[in-house]
Every structure is written in structure tokens, then in C-alpha cells.
Image (cartoon, rainbow, N blue to C red; front, side):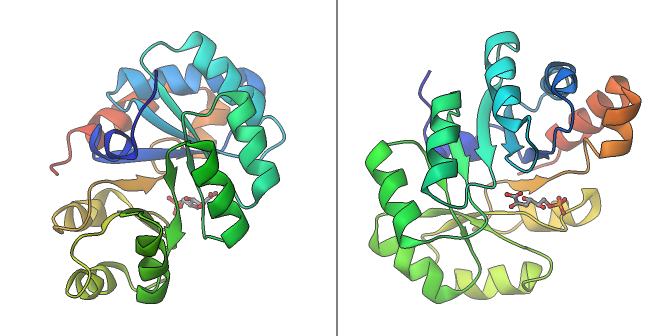
Length: 209
Ligand SMILES: O=C(O)C(=O)C[C@H](O)[C@H](O)COP(=O)(O)O
């Protein structure tokens, strides 16, 4: 299935950012999130098992839309595409990464903070971006300010977003969804507490956009 970046951003109000330390946690974790209503999953390439986790989730978790996060260069881009990532997310952008991503055709959610970064991506035809690290980079006031001159750009703020401030982010006209790790923190994953992860996912999925 091919998804567009619009579908990636509009399917759920919250995109879980997943750090998978052990490969055998990947499928139950993804199932727990999907069961709660969060189908779009970002697997960060922060751990050695991440690429295999993407492969397994794609093969074994129907309904999941599986993306790769922490794409920082052309090598990680290629590995993620080879593993079957349906979209990719990056914390920032370089020209080489952007060129390769656009040439590959894979939907990309590139990370930005400043108006100049936003404008450079607009020049390349990109209007959907990750705002990262959201809280540290000015949070809601920053996004509101960027939305003044650049209202055509839609963001997925990520980094420091939690169940409380997510509601305020989602209320902004230039925010389509938020990203966050609070549904699946490592304590719950390591404890195998899939029921609590599903509960948190359901709560996140019910947030209003
Ligand atoms: O690994 C990446 O590619 C990232 O860009 C970082 C993640 O999106 C944030 O670290 C999630 O932030 P928290 O929800 O505050 O845990």
C-alpha cells in the first residue's frame, strides 16, 4: 500500500514515536498501539534492531502504517526503504538527504524549526513538516508565529509533547498531528504491559484534532 504524507498526518491525532530495544517486543508493541487506534507508527532507527522491527511489523501487524524515524542521511534513508518503510521522518534536513528522498518518492516528513528552514522546504514543494524539538524550540508560541506568514505549511510537532500539551498543539490551525513517545515508554515496553500501552494509545487516538 502506498500512503501519502497527508494520510500519514491525518490518520490519527498522535503518531507514536517508538524506540525498540528488543526485536521480540516489536510485534506485540505495534499490535498494542494499533489495538488502541493508532495505526501510523514511527519506528526510530535509534537501535540496532529497528530495521528488522520494521520488517516484522509490516509482515505481522495488519492495519499498521509503518514509517522509519531518525533518518539522518542517505544511508539511513536507503536502509529504511529497503526494510519497507512506508514513510520516513527526519529530525532535520540536509540537501543530500532531501535530494535522495525526493528522488526515491518515499513520503517524507522532514524536521525543521526556523522560518528559513520552512521556506527552503517550500521551495522544494514540501508543505508537511515535523517541528522538532517542539517544546525546546519554542513550542506553541513559535508555531503560532510561523503560521502568520507561512500558513500553508502543516506541522507535526514532536519532542516534549505529552497528553496535556498535545490538546493545545492540536488546536492550532497549522498542526495536523503530534508525535510522541508517551504511549509506549521503555518501562511499559520492557514490562510487556501491552494493556496499558493500548489504553494510552486509545486515549491519544481520542484527542480532538
Ligand atoms: O528519533 C528521532 O528521529 C526524533 O526525531 C526524536 C523523537 O521524535 C523524539 O525524541 C520524541 O520525543 P519525545 O516524545 O519527547 O520522547
